[in-house]
Structures are given as structure tokens and as C-alpha cells.
Length: 137
Image (tube, rainbow, N blue to C red):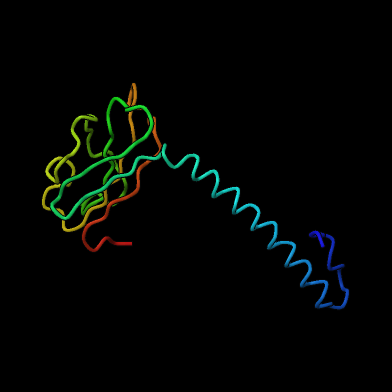
């Protein structure tokens, strides 16, 4: 039974079979969209930068698209709780070290990066976020 937005009719008695049919039809629509979204995610995933930090404090950045002119570092840390531009790294700066990326002496921090083109324009999506320490909500 396809979903019918006109059911149940206003002030009609509840009918379990009708409601079950409506809910199952909605679930079928949602499931179909989920498979479409999964296919799109696989298609576009290589175009999202992936930032990694190993236990030794070495940073790598994987990106399947054309290399941007610079990678813009965005950070949150004590004294700068809102995301803000923290610096830039050239693509050949990777692998980087904590000293290149992490705010000095921060008890906690979060880092993400995006590609930067001319005049500071963002050219890639933001990478995943790397967190260290007890990051406040």
C-alpha cells in the first residue's frame, strides 16, 4: 500500500491495519532514501579531506581531489572556544607534527582543516575533527 497523506481522515476511528499500512509505507520511503544517500556518500567521500593523528603526534591528511594551494587549520582550545582560523599549512608540510598544528600548552583542543584557494576562499569541505583532552560541550 503506498503512503496516503490524507489518511487517517480527521475524527475517524483508529484502524490498526490502516495505520500499520501508512507506517510501513513511510518506512519504505525512508529506506529507499537511505540507499540513495549511501550511494551518494560513496561517490563523494573521496572529495572530503581525512585528517589523522597517530599516538606519536604525527599528522597526515588524505585527499583524493586536486591539491589546494594551502590547508587552512581551524581550531578550538581554551581561550578560543569558537572555531577560528589558527593557521595554514602547505600540502607538502605533511606529514606534520603536533608543533605544526596544535595550540601550545592547551589542556584540550580540536582541529579540522579545509583547502584554501585565492583570497582565503574555502575550496574543499572541512575534514573530520580531531579532538584531544576533555573537550567541553
